[in-house]
Image (cartoon, rainbow, N blue to C red; front, side, top):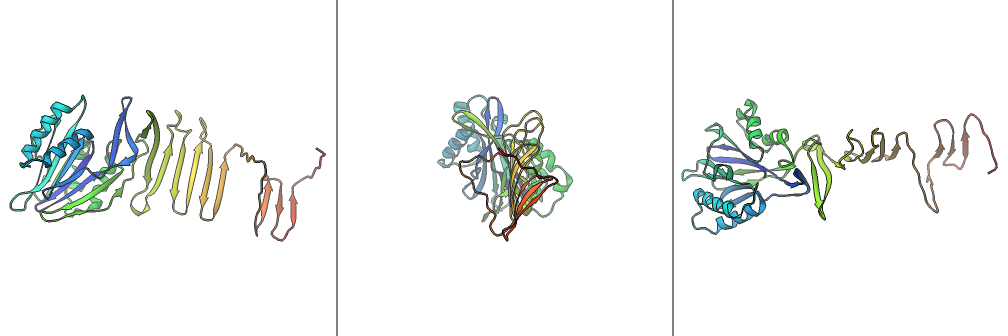
Length: 328
């Protein structure tokens, strides 16, 4: 399931919905690391509908509903009840909400789900000029977050209004990005996707050939300063033994942290050059033929106490405390 959060004024709805897709594997819920969806909002007869739950049930419900001459909310609830009764397996969920307008152009919202036996509901937070509805996955957590006066007292609503709410409650089933809509009786505007800054604790994975493959994708910082971060592997019980890839302003760094000790092995691709690090370890370069050439610059090879330096003008300099030569 996913989460829709709406802020409704007398003649308009601001509606946000996340793009995350989750699934269960061996009893645990995971965020799908590669798949997202922007198909959770449907525009039917000029009004917006949010659908969530088992994907096959949702597809079947939407198809049946648009084929009806009677497309009232009561009819939608009736269809949902029949579909869930006849097709749902144990644990399957089905939920939906409508964001519409009455004959006078006044905005209203209705919702229902299998937990209330598909009876229509219309409860909301706030007051007539600012009505808030959180619906879908983690809606209790969202309602608790949005009950904070800093949200309920907001007069101006815009896409950025929804970001801290989703970031505060993001989990395996809710988050990744949000898509925001501004809906009036005669116009629907969709804003571009907004990436969310999420905690690394979210379990993210995909399933390939029946095997669970775990990668974690998130963003450090938010807004224009957001930088993508990928974590590969589950790690050991200390949180080490996994790879972190970070694309930052001016470079890209891939880091592996040694099992049990967390010592860094990394390659850092910066605008000004490349740095390789094996903290308290070794680097082996193995090849049949090898060239290491500095073109137009200086080359150094050695340790922090002794090294050989080759200069751009062709000189070779030896630095050290003692020089010994041995026959091999």
